[in-house]
Structures are given as structure tokens and as C-alpha cells.
Amino acid sequence: MERTRRKTRQIHIGDVSIGGGAPIRIQSMTNTKTYDIAATLGQIQALAAAGCEMVRFAVPDRESAAAVKELVAKSPVPLIADIHFDYRLALEVIANGIQGLRINPGNIGGKDRVLAVVKACKERGVPIRIGVNGGSLEKDLLVKYGGVTADALVESALAHIHLLEEANFFDMKISLKCSHIPLMLAAYEKLGRLVDYPFHIGVTEAGTVRQGTIKSAVGIGALLAQGIGDTLRVSLAGDPVEEIFVAKTILRSLDLLQNGVEYIVCPTCGRTEIDLPALAAQVETKVEQLQITAPLKVAIMGCVVNGPGEAREADVGIAGGKDSGLLFVKGQIVGKYPKEVLADVLIQKIIEIAKEKGK
Image (cartoon, rainbow, N blue to C red; front, side, top):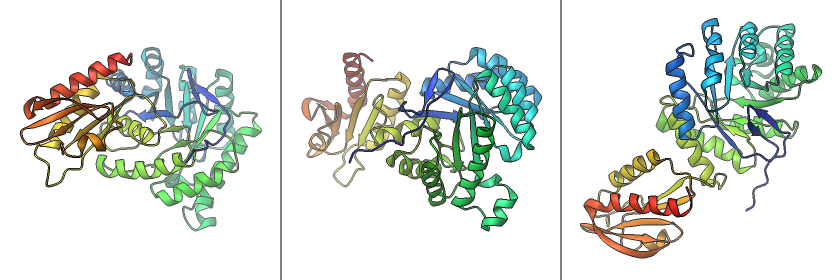
């Protein structure tokens, strides 16, 4: 079924276009102390190398705000400052050259303070993400709706949107995050019918790498399948570089990302004669280090009977048998090798095909 993308206006964070038909952008967030410039910059560079297109970091104090100037100067990707409670920190990071700003207008102070931040962003061409979060909804909305509901999230977002629009500011994207997926889906779907601003999507506080990956895939995938979402972050408790791998996998699974390596891996059964999980992990780890950007489908199958046929659409793959395995390209067998060298043979073939494709 053809997927219709939600039509939005376009904004730019640095040189990255968002919405308005631009590709869906992958974002993450550092977990270092922002004022530790070496550690923060190292994580930004690792994220960028993994395929992250924008990086957000927390700015809870003046020391972190002061670090922004050097971080922006040395970062390979645009940076977004995450500000809560103190509008003066927002003004400082804007003056220091930040390319994007994430605020929750509900906790940054009164209307005059929000408008002071908006004025500075407008002068410097800095987009604002209005980040509504189920954990920090305004108290009056919690009373009105009896807790966190989709309608409460949408009403909060609309109030902030209208405040910025009254100041003649339209360079914004919106997020409506909570950890309960059905509620989050309902909120995005409703707001998507009311405004044309680009959306940043994700499941907040998703959990550990294992649980958070599943929750993020369900929540983010459900929105993307409806054409909703212009930037995304997979929120995991762990190394943020892992978030990029998961984000790219979600996008590839919906044909929304055409570059990089997609794996087709047999779940194994009683016919499997090799240690397929270990072999697949070895190949995946090595290939990720190579940072291949060519669009490749790689199959790692456990059965020589059905493997090549089941993975016929793969560019290259292996099918394991007793003490050996078959190497195949586009479903056609091209060689048989001992199990000890199967991973090396497959990796070498992946490199060759990637070079043929020019990446």
C-alpha cells in the first residue's frame, strides 16, 4: 500500500531541512555533561559517524551554555540545546550560535520570558521545538482532563503554538511525547489534523535497550506508517549510538531509508547446523564498523535447503549447512565454504558489492 506523507511546512536546523518533503531525519541526545567539551564532542562525533543528522544536549547551567560556542564550531552536525526552567540559558545559547532550540514553554516562565526567547530566535534564525511531555503538563490541564490525555497534550501544544504565532514566529516543529503508546498515537493523529508544522516523534522514557527498542519500533513505526513524522529519536537508556542503529532499522523496515545495510536473518530451527546467532552478530559488528552507505540487503540463513530461495531478493547471503555453508548472490549459489570462514567470506563479498555500487 502506498504511504501518503503528511504535508508540512519546511524548517531548517543549520543546513538540515525538516518537513516539506525532506527525508525523515534521525536525531539523538548526548548523555555527557555538556560543559565537558571533550566528552560531549566525542559523543557528537560518534553519533554523526553512525548516521545521526542532528544532536541535542541538555543545558542545565551557565557552564553548559558557555560550552555551546566551541561545540557548535567543532560539531560535524547541527546542534540543538534542550532548555528547561531558565529562559536566560536559552538566550545565552542563542547568542553562542546554537542552531536549534528545544523548550517546554510550560516550564520556562511567564509569557514575557517565552516571547524574549522567541524574539532572540527570530533575530538569529533559530527554529524552536515545542516539546510537550506527558510528565510536565500544566496543572490546570491535568485538572481539566483528569490526568494526561491526548486532548490535554494537544491543548497544551496548541496554546504554545498560538503564543509563538502571535509573535509572528512560525519556524517551529512540535513533539507530543509520553511513554504510553496508544495515548501518544492519538495525540499526534489529532494535532496532525489541526496544524501543518513538522513533527518530531518518539516514545519518551522508552526503557532499556531491549524494551525501549521494541516500544520505539511500535510507537514510531505506527506513526511513520501513517505518514506522520519528520524527525525522530529512539530514546534508550544506554549508549546513544545504539539509538541510531535502531532508528535506521525502523526507517528501513518501512522503506523510508534507502541506504545502508538491511539484514535478513533466519530465526533458526532444529535444522540449523551452525551457530547462526554468533555468526550474524560477528558480521553485523564488522559491517557496522565499515560504515557502508550503499543500499544492501544481506541474508544470513541457517538452512541450505530453503536459505537461498527464502532470501532471493538479498544482494548477498550465506546459508549454513553441516560444517559448511553456501554463499549466494541474488539467490544464486556462487560457492561453498567451511563454516570457520563463512563470516569472512560474506564480509568480503559485502565489501565488493558495496564498492560496485559506489559506496
